[in-house]
Image 1: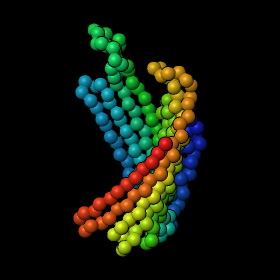
Image 2: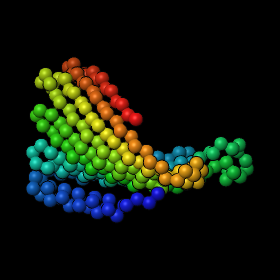
Image 3: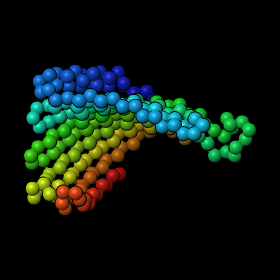
Image 4: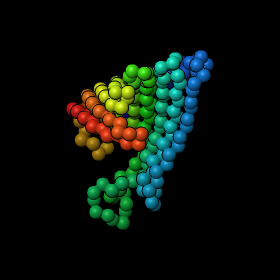
Length: 199
């Protein structure tokens, strides 16, 4: 499924430039790269992932994190037919690439913590945008933490790909709310209770 990646790449470049300028002002920055490989026996499934992660301080209390990734999956998987001498009769060949990035703006303060996150993921039959807001409030000298969060996903699914039901591009919207309580018992243990509701 085609997605407006040119606009996303431009926005990502702008964020990196702003991060660079902010780094010059505050001197706190980090840039990391990561590569992961998952490979099953006999080359059945192979997943390669490349990550770039950057973070920068935005003043005394705020910081921004940016993560970009590209992962590919290749190989073959059974489709349910009985095996024959010709593997093409009962195996489906895979080769798919996903591109995604996430921007997170966070505040770590004396009274509360706050974060805002925007994410984008694009693959041939699935395009997803997500928003999330969360906050944490510590009470009783931070021995009891109250967590609250909201998230919303806006997805587009292409059902016309080979093997799909053929309904065209369909939309899926997923709102969620999260509430959690964490109690610190001592310097090595804690107990937490979390509730998530999504539709």
